[in-house]
Image 1 (cartoon, rainbow over the protein chains, first blue to last red):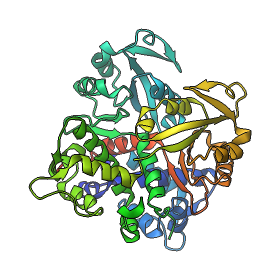
Image 2 (cartoon, rainbow over the protein chains, first blue to last red):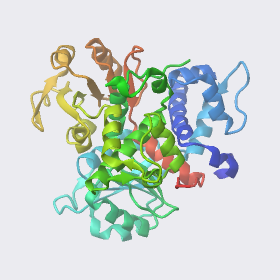
Image 3 (cartoon, chains in turn cyan, blue):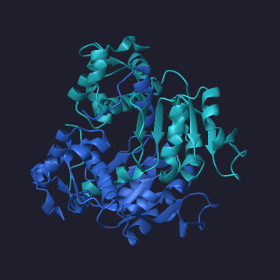
Length: 222
Length: 222
């Protein structure tokens, strides 16, 4: 799995590059569905409002792809990016907090499409415990550590209020989980070997309000 | 409003800087609640897992702040960032698509906390039209252009399936709206003066899977 990238390359890959890889993966999946066999850096750049130079630079991290004048082979590049992003496999995901956002995520098709399978749900509300959401029975939060371990959960999604999030995350860490997607509006404290991503939908709106207030130019292909 | 930034500075501000400003705003709000009067770039960096140099660089875009040795005045800096991000005011937001994600967003406290007020809901489902969500009556999508105009909507959130999103966005643009937050998994085509942000929660999970597969080091303060 790790043969694609050596340690030195890995450490040079920025957060923005990873995000763009996710975008390229989507664009390539679309092109593949449309039966395109090759794609140029220019075409790939255009669909994502980037420059061709940026695309070539991002893809150069992963060795030499494509042929000058012919472009990149769509399926091969798509598969390679999937392997690099770790979405050529299934991940076992647990979701904590079956409230408004949690319930929406259980039905969120983009998760399953990319191999992120929510297989466990937890809540502390007696009315929710034991209920069925899309075929998954909601577990009691009291059994969190044991059930995360027993079910070999690899990723946990936190969709609880900020006031209880840290307390629950301490248990998630105790269960040996190394990756957390956090929807609670706070910075979680975790050990160095645990990965956390914060998702705050208001921050995307702040990008829009910034752009409008400051008359920021929308990003366009150069 | 725009006096804070001149045109040259604006164009140098990257997407990542804007995102970090949103993070600083949250950290400063927290410090203010805790009655801190000043904060150093080191402290601000630590809470966001950045370097102090990065914090100083980001804040330098907005003129000279703070005093060497004393740090930045919390409330003043917080207010200045709020003004720059355009969240020192109320924005009128409409949401299209009252499904799983749409319903969750209507109750999403982070939106209202930052001044993004959802004041209109639209759907095409006869069972939803006329129903009440948190005090807002769902409008018929047929009346989209007229109602967006009549209600002076400034930002539209798209929470419909990918298959119908472009069609609806064409109407949103027709109504004169210049900012769109898109939850549908596709790249929308809009005129150059319309800002679009795509929100895809699976992409955050892909960052985590990338990190786990490639043994990427979690970001830590240096």
